[in-house]
Image (tube, rainbow, N blue to C red; front, top):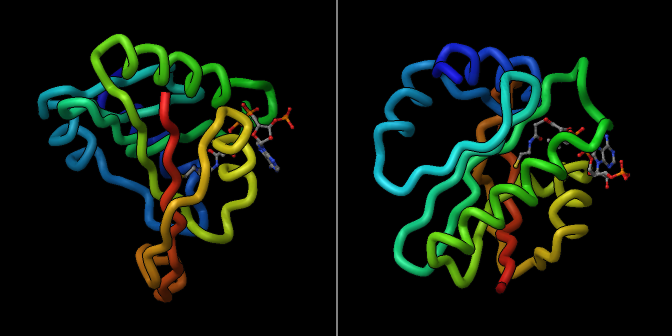
Length: 136
Ligand SMILES: CC(C)(COP(=O)(O)OP(=O)(O)OC[C@H]1O[C@@H](n2cnc3c(N)ncnc32)[C@H](O)[C@@H]1OP(=O)(O)O)[C@@H](O)C(=O)NCCC(=O)NCCS
């Protein structure tokens, strides 16, 4: 998957908060410990540092949602993170993103914190993030 393909899917999926650019994806993919699962229809990007994994983003193109793709990518990501030595996985999710939170809770994540006004919204506002953690 190219950074351009990732940015395209991200832009189609993220309508409430700012999508990431091709340059941002290219920079991230050069960092150590990155894990990229999926394809241009649905992907997860995260990384492992020491015994902690961080799920950075997940996106399924709107034309392919509700077909189990994100859940499959999440299971794949968690397996790879564990294999690479992660004992815990963290992520941040917009406090009003019920679809994503439902996905994460299903795979065993729990709320452990909150960051007020964390994300920039597409209409110029701010929205808080819930911090979720999964322990293997
Ligand atoms: C969240 C997102 C990644 C889910 O992708 P998806 O491929 O459609 O998800 P799946 O089909 O694997 O769904 C897995 C579970 O997630 C939950 N879920 C997914 N979409 C949902 C929706 N629109 N409403 C409620 N729950 C939803 C459900 O629990 C679902 O299981 P079910 O279909 O058995 O009920 C997708 O909606 C998306 O790209 N959204 C925009 C980007 C985003 O918000 N990313 C997360 C930011 S941290």
